[in-house]
Image 1 (cartoon, rainbow, N blue to C red):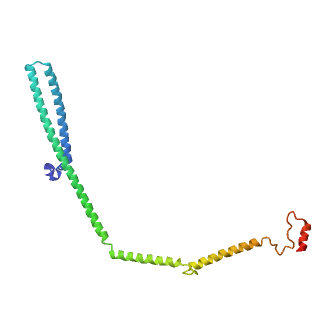
Image 2: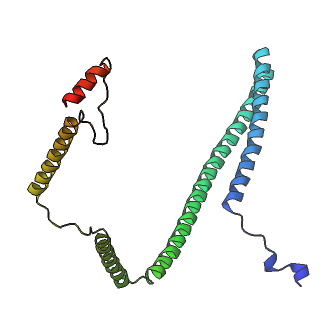
Image 3: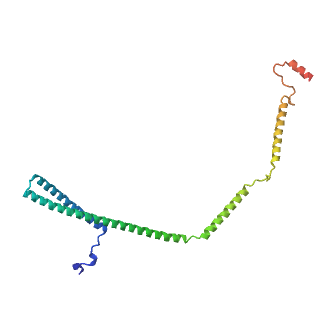
Length: 214
């Protein structure tokens, strides 16, 4: 029986808004072609009437031109209606797309909210606080260890600046005395030299006399 009468499952699906918009655009294109043909006829009638004098022939052509103009006006009204229908359907399609996008966004937010609740449910605030306090204690212990390792040995904790200045002055005085004694003993003949050196221009006899006098 289904082969003869068909079944409900063989029905065509209902046209969508996009299908209706495409069909309306095709109808408008067909009507526009007809309007262009009517415009060509009106131009021809106008040319014929311009060449004829007033009379029955010119009146007949004028009647044809009036019928053609009425038909053109009818097609123009149909195009205006179809354009309004297309505008309404496009607006509905846009609203439908916006609603679809809104629902998709809402579904995504629901999934994200569920996932966030699931993840935050695994977090224990008390444990986080405990870890924070433990980190503070460890950092404090680390600073104490560093201070202990950086401690100086065999150095008094407190030194008197006046004593340090006095010791510095004494060192400077000793250096001055050592420098003066060195300059005083420059001309002294060392003990291991038997005879003093003869200066340039001095005769041996004079030197011998100096030695005998000494």
